Amino acid sequence: MRDQLSKLVFSTDGGRIKEEPQAPTITPSDGFAKVRRETKGRKGKGVVTITGLGLAPKELKALAKTLKQKCGTGGTVIDETIEIQGDKRDVIKAELEKAGFKVKFIGG
Image (cartoon, rainbow, N blue to C red):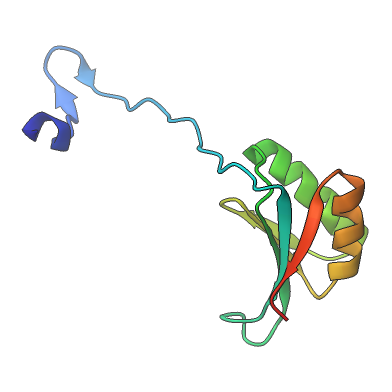
């Protein structure tokens, strides 16, 4: 148990110990892309968040880039969530359906 909790930083045998990068975990999709408008914590500015896509990080960034271009706004990818500035839910829904996702609006 103690060996699992300790973190070896330096060894006289091999020098500095390098951690192996872990592969990112991808949460599987339930079949729906959830589109939600949020303003909390953004000083009243609205963003549209898209979750539940079940894509790898590179594919998620590529999808975010196309959505930002179609909406003509900025945005970002945080963890497994795409954030697009402004209220462009209809444009986002059309683009996601064109990409083969089922879209569900969450919240108001």
